[in-house]
Image (cartoon, rainbow, N blue to C red; front, side, top):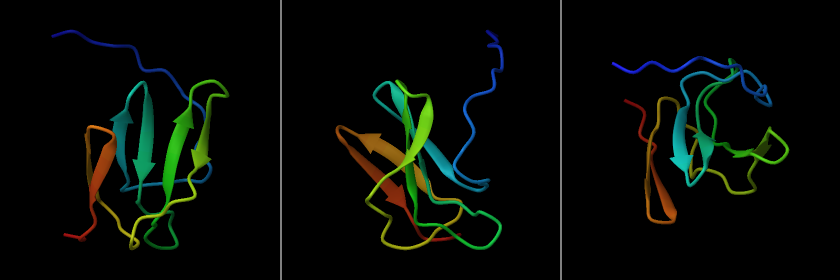
Length: 83
């Protein structure tokens, strides 16, 4: 089994847990989750040039923790029912 080194990336805009990360082209998107005060409807996209996470203007249609997300073509589909 091939192993990869773990490297520390840039900090998130706030502490998050129970979010979903999906690869988008050559970058990553984080959707939903929990920041310790409640469920989130936020979407963050990693900016490779500035090496920062940027909050997106768009939001999920509701706050969600433990979402599922998949990229199909140019669109990301997010499961937002909390299970």
